[in-house]
Amino acid sequence: MPLELAQTQGAVPRGRLLLVDDEEYILKSIRRVLRRGDWQIETASDAEEGLKALERFTPEVVISDFRMPGMNGVEFLSRVKAQVPRAQRIMLTGQADQQAIEEAINRSEIFRFISKPWNDSHLVLTVKSAFEQYALQAENERLLRVTQQQNEELRRLNAELETRVALRTHLLSQAKREWELSFDSIETPLAVVRRDFGVRRANRAYTDLAGERLKEPLSELSEEGAEQLCHKLLFDRDTPCPGCPLPEALHSGKGARAEISQRGRTYAMAAYPLTTEGRAVCSYRDISDEREMTRRLIDTEKMAAVGQLAGGVAHEINNPLGGILAFAQLMKRDEGRNASDLESLDLIEESALRCKRIVESLLKFSRHSRTEDRRAFQLNKCAEDSAVLFGAQLKAYSKVRLELRLAPELPELFGDPSQLSQVMLNLLQNGLHALPAEGGVLCLETGKEGDRCYFRVADTGTGIEERYLGHIFEPSFTTKPPGQGTGLGLSIAYRIVEDHGGIIKVDTQMGEGSRFTVYIPIPLQLERLP
Image (cartoon, rainbow, N blue to C red):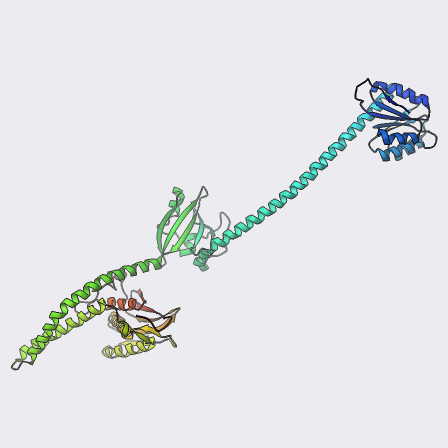
C-alpha cells in the first residue's frame, strides 16, 4: 500500500504508524481520522504484508485488526513484538470476545483495545497515548542505558580507586615499616614523649636501656596511657630528672639540650617538639665514656708538660746532687773523723741518696721506656714476681693478707715486664697504706676481657673521696702525711700504662675500698718494629 504523510510539506513527522486491516474502508477511515496527528502512516491489507512493512518501516505504533484471513491479529502482533519490541500494539476488535482479549494480552502484551465502531476522539487519544508511551519507553531505555553506562563507569572507577587505595595502603605500610626499622636501627635511644613525660613511642635502643622496667610494649599504650614515664623507665626516678630540657622545648617550640647525670652515667639529652601536639622527640646519648676520655686526654697533656719540666729539673739537680754524694763519701773515708762527724756525714749521704731516688723517679716519669727493653711476656709471671717482692714487705704487717688470683691460659703480651711490675708494686703499696690499722685484704688479680688482658689491685681500705678522684694521677698530688710520699707513684704508673697502649680505671667506695684495674691490649703480632 502507498505511504501516506498526514503533515504539511517540509514538516517533520511526529511518529511512524502502521495500520493493518483486511477491510479497505476501515483503513481509509482510520487514516482520515489520524491525519490531524501529523504522524507518518503506512497501511497493509493483511498480516503478511504488515510483516514486510515492518522490515522497511520500523513503526513506533501498530494498529491491527483481530480477525484477518490467514494470520490473525494476535499472531501478527506477537510477531511484531518479537521484531520490534518497543513498538506499541493496539488491537481492533469487532466483538467482545473475552477469550481473544486474554489471549492477546498474554501473547502480545497489547497496549490498548479499540472496539468497532470506534469514537474518533477516543481513537486519536489512544494513538497519541501509544506514541507517548513509546517515547516514554524509549526515554526509559535511554536512561537505563545511561544509568548502566554510569554504573559501569562507577564500577570501573571504584575498582580503580580500590586498586589505588590498596597500593597506597601497601606503600604506607611499607613506609611505616621502613620508618620503624630506621628508627630501631639508630643506636642512640630515641622516644616520643608527651608533656606529662609519658612515653608514646620508643626505638629498640631505648627499650634496651629501660630493660626490665618496661612493663608492656610501648606501641600498645593508649593515648592517655599509661603510667610508663620517661624518668621512671630510664632512671627509676619517681620525679622528672633535674635539668630535663623537655618542658623548655615544648614551651618555646624550639629544640632544647641539656646534660643530665643519673645512676652514675652522664647523658646528652635533646628534645625536639612536634608542632602543636604537646609531644617531643627526645634523644639520650651516653657521653660518660667521652667525658672520661676527655679527662684522660687532659691528664695526658698535663703530665706530658709536667714530664718535660720534671726531666729538665731532674737533670739540673742530678749533677750537684752527685757532687754532694761523692764528697760526703770521700769525707767518710778520711782518717781521724770523730763519731759526731761520721754521723753527720751518714745523714748527708742518706739524704743525698734519697734525693737521688726522687730524681730517678722524675726521670722515669719524664721519658718512655726503651724499645730494646720490650719483649713478649706472661702477665701471670709478672704478677707472681710482684707478689713475691711485695710479700717480703708484708712481713711487718701481720694483720694484712695478700690474695693472688691468676686467670689460666692468658695470651702473651708485649712490653716491658719490669715497668709493669713496678706499676703492680706501686698499686699494692698504695693499697697497703689505705688499709686501716686493724688490717685488711689486698688482692692482685689477672684476667682477659675482649681483646685485652688486665690486672687488678683491690683493697678493703677506706676508699678515695670523690673530690680527690680527678687529681690522683697528677704529679706530686698525695693525701699522705709529709715525709711519707712524693705523689709520683700513680703519675709514673699512669705514664707506664699509657706508654704500653693501656688504660687505668678506678672504682672506689668510701668505707669499702678501691680497685685499680690496668688494661693492656693483646698484640696482633709479637714482633713489633721500633
